[in-house]
Image (cartoon, rainbow, N blue to C red):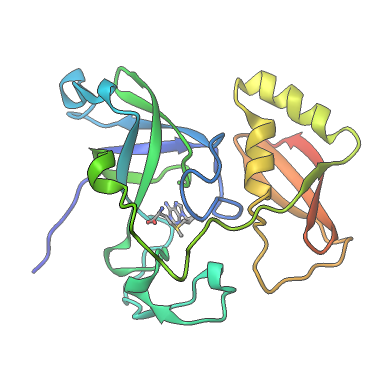
Length: 231
Ligand code: SAM
């Protein structure tokens, strides 16, 4: 039997590519985006009462990871990319029906849109439902997960000559906490776990409309090299 779902909106996100998006929400509070609701859900009726809520669950489609053939086993990046696990034991993007879920902060409600922060969603992500976070039911104080018992330890992020000033200038132009976004996302160490790059290897990613480039002067240390417009 097949069921079909229709997006209730799409996310306009600071993340323009999959690389360097945190592995879960809340890891980068400066990661902001807008959920633009589509008709008929862009009406004030659909969000009446939501102003009483600080966080919402978003159910969404991993639209850039959809596959025809379901996988039973996946290799989560968090486990180094070498360990194979049952798909239902992980939060991997490759999964039956391609459905993701994230708890994000609801910053503001505007006509036809929700302003969000702490997101881990790619630009253009189709959202299929929104639900209020219910602390007494959703935060389980006795819960355990031996695979993911704590957030990944952040690594130090330093700024190269001029890069911090570039970030400040773009932050001002965008009206976004760009410096914090870069620091919070790079501290998650986006490189694949098995890579030990030479210091001359430069990595890059697009946040909003800027290209951020960095390298690893030492194994677990990041130095931001430049933050330049990529319009
Ligand atoms: N919090 C969600 C969950 O548990 O279902 C997502 C977890 S998943 C491990 C997080 C990764 O999904 C991010 O690092 C990003 O690269 C990827 N991602 C985010 N939005 C996506 C999209 N629309 N399509 C494909 N991959 C996406």
